[in-house]
Image (tube, one colour):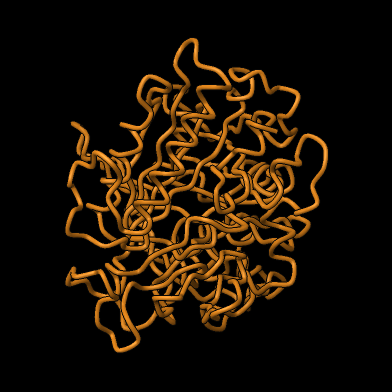
Length: 440
């Protein structure tokens, strides 16, 4: 895991009629007006923090009435639309939505590069249609009266995809297998996969609609390997964006990287001038996906003071134990009257702090999950951890290695599945996601 507040969180973007967001997503507001703040996004460590929108508009006119041709009685939450086309794929810098689905597919036996290209072409067309709040051909009608609800669909390729499509020469070194960690209890059947899809929306019905549509689109070309469902605080639940709490009750997500940071693109996205095996990844990013079970019964037996020392932050407001408010930087050298560090040496916040890891940072964008209660009475709950970086060998891996050696939080979590995916840049108008790889 990483510190719930180890680097700055994305700030709201107002956008402009002719510009693009700090994250690079194009804004189409010819018939829509941009929402100043749509919701909270960008989680750090174990949960979500406040963030801003990129490429987001609402299908309403300037006076607040539905746009021409849209008779649905939608609120601003339901009418909010994220643009499919752009420099980067949606769902990376987009504000984190209320509902999410993560699903991995394996190509069917005998399916290769040709079938994969046809599948990505179908998926891209369906995603573009659904994200605009429209119904694709042969639609089931599941979300017939719903708007786009900030729907995003993001596509990625796993390591094995390149073997199955005869593209091993174009597989980036960044997709080398993640090392094993001592806290792992990884189930291979719920890990990896040839193809990975992330779905997010502020309406659970809209999110499921997209999941179902993409599953049907897969046809005979690919089969579901694993699928997971997640949630976050509902859009508009608070009067202003604020840092949420994870299922452990911790304020989490204060310091995610912001698109306005001068080094944001360098840390999160593959350079636009990438060459060699990575040329098709220009504008893309690498996603590490981990299903992290929280051992909530064990955690909840701890006193508040003990929980705070495990994390290194106050539970009431998320402020560091070294003092200040939620956004106050950690003072790792500050000591109490007894001469001991106020933030313990094994505190999660200390170990994962960028200054303790050579500046390593990643954009964390997870969902919480709860998949029922076991026969022993323990909840199957925790975090669907998703983090984004330009290079996982410089982002996730060194931080997780350090956490694995001495993080106090490790006693209360268990990593149960894992995946690493190359997520190419966004598709331009007339393109499908991954076209530069599959047809290059």
